[in-house]
Image (cartoon, rainbow over all chains, first blue to last red; front, side):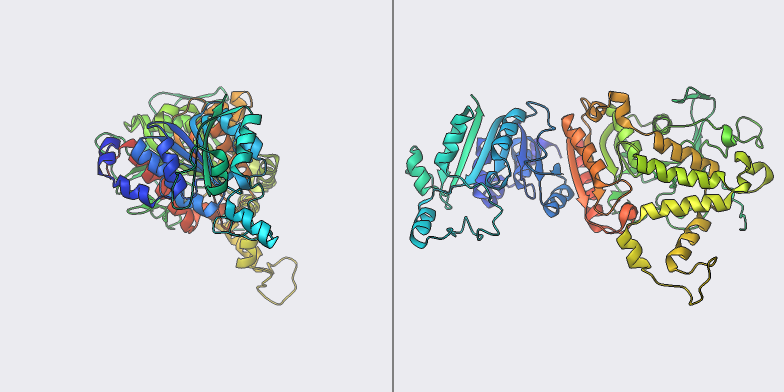
Length: 217
Length: 379
């Protein structure tokens, strides 16, 4: 079966609907046929989707060996590795898009990771949970303790999220590093983008997840 | 120690058309390559997989061995419905150049006189020489491009050499539990084995075959040392611990179970393997340093590659540890290659690639299926 006939026969919409929300939004931003590196690709859901429906040359890096084994055993090109240590060896401009979904807050050196992403890729797609969401602010203010929500589910002593940030923080970092925000959006868990989509301050208050597309200015 | 004869078996083989030039500058006028195949080559000749065997392996991958009578060394991996599925792929495995299972090496005649063997006159060969011979063999079998080249340990070195030397002839490459070069530690262990062979009086400066002897003691000690490097401490502890065979305290008898196990490994090995061949092949491994041909830049070996790679290592392998395999995977990234890299959790040491490791088998089978999809091979 060639790629064209596969695109026609695969139940594309079904696959997309079952995909994690942020992955679905990321997939919508990626042009067909693009070269994509998905850092923290898990079992490879996004790269498989991009290959099957967009004809992308999509590859992944994943830190959890069980997920890597599952992905490779499924025929997907996935490397065991992590964002902090396994980006520097890729040549400049290897990819059209480098994706980092829900991982930025867990890496050791977020600034260096972003630099590497925009060295090896033309565009960086970064999604992260927004620490500026009103519920977190309220809980911290009201209880005086590290806030716990569905998105930020683990206690402070167990969380892998060592570098949480807000949407405003991310805008600041992008401008300090000289990155152009090509696109951005914030959504709640239900995937609703309106009505505050155009206003960073409101998004910072009501958005649970943020997704940015950056490039070097 | 008794000195059993190596059984004489007529191995399936072909003779390379024309001479073979070796890295050392010697030209071998007539080269015989013994090989076995499994499955059926398709009409497009696009489903061939070459399996490269390890140091003391051979071409009998998936069938009983004609000398030892034991099952194939990769019985669990190669066969109908198995990860390397012989219902779908045409599998070839050849005995390496310098080997002793029918390919040209120390045990084969120099020229027409069947009693005048190469012995220690056999020229030094490299991993690249082995791969050159394999390439010629594959061409003579009518195959211009291999769907995949797969191998573990020294076989993995051959896989890397294939991908570097003949990138257009390899659609997918699976180097398993291997290294981009032989480390000082690797060379050191090999040297102990070689010295043990040299120290055996029956070696007779490598001309033991003239007196009908075998340096069995030396070769078996070499095997015992090597065998320790194939296992992990956990595996040895699990298998033997400190269990003893008898209560008597004797210095010269084997007391601990691990000793009798190693002795058994050594004594069965000498029945199927030639000492001079062991010297030739361990040397070939020691010389292996893929990056040295590319200004010490391993990525350079794979520049412009379009081959799909799957690098696999095992957590408890200390002979060719994950670090070396990861270096290969990173070098491939540096070359922009399409690479998968998996470290399989196993406490069985280097030998894990030969044993029942379901995650490994799933990974290998799944990677090949994915590649077959990309290559447009019929299911």
